[in-house]
Amino acid sequence: MKRQIVMDIETKAATIAEVSREYSITRNSIYKWICFSG
Image (cartoon, rainbow, N blue to C red; front, side, top):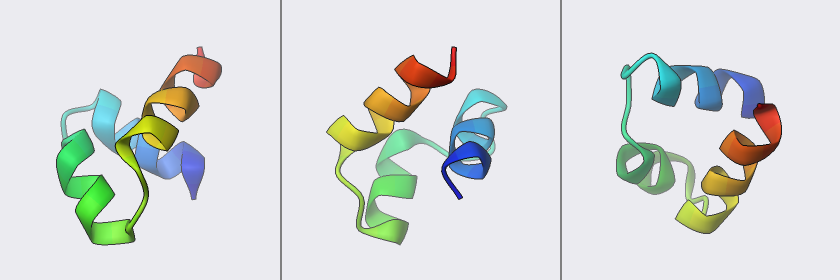
């Protein structure tokens, strides 16, 4: 799930705010996933 979310953000399919609301994940967590994904 994390990889798909990061991929959606990186390909501009979704914004961090949209993903955060849709999956009830903090933006801080999403930024960390992006950072660790390289």
